[in-house]
Image (tube, rainbow, N blue to C red; front, side, top):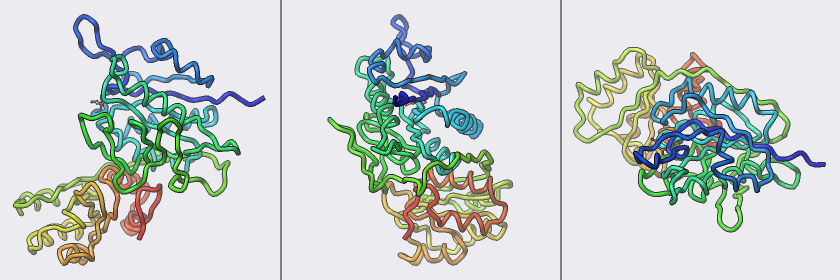
Length: 346
Ligand code: ASP
């Protein structure tokens, strides 16, 4: 007899797990171990659905690297026991967490599906129920050989499944809260779930053990280029002690002010061993530092091009690489490589 499909449903916090107090109308987290009571329809799947709630649950603005380590550890501890994992998480930093987990978990062979909602699950018009039900179904889906359909860290939201490290939270208002502007959706949910298998990462051979990484170094600063930015402020930022890498958010295909005041300032960081990664401020497209002379001058002083990586994935990748390597050459080598599907190499 086939073993029943088993899913671990993890509640970390965020809007999805809230219920409105009927008297005060305040939103409060509800006792998540009661989820099957709240949503009896989940029993209809016929899967074993176990729940685990973080204690305390957190608004995702409080996510930090300790939280990512705890979540990774929880998945590692339960990896052999479950067919898939559904992580309920606040939307605000979900793209950062999904990106971080994609690096920390390494080459996974089971689905880890992050989801949440814009309206609490206890509200009548909630988007949380559909998001949760479809995420569970996706995490449980297998091909005819019994392998998971999506062995990746993903985000499911409003009928679309995305590769987690390709996403950005796009709106604080609409139900379709996320975008994956540089990579196609992994699945689309309508009457049927259509998996976009050509774009899903599958292992070359199945059966490898999970090898998570817990060493992260968050010595990273983001500097967003703005018109009229002050040289003194830029100089002060690049000189802060303790930075090992800067994500430089530039214009368009990787452009920045052409004056030597700018490149000289960035070079100061590079000369003292700080890695500078060029990421575009645009939601879609990629950094091409050969396209314009301003990009070229950044390349000439040793700035690394971040291609079509999102800021969230760039930050997570840097935390991960800085935690693994002390030599900048190794870090820059991997920044240019597609490690977990976060980057389109050209
Ligand atoms: N502030 C909430 C959070 O990110 C918003 C949400 O869950 O959508 O935790």
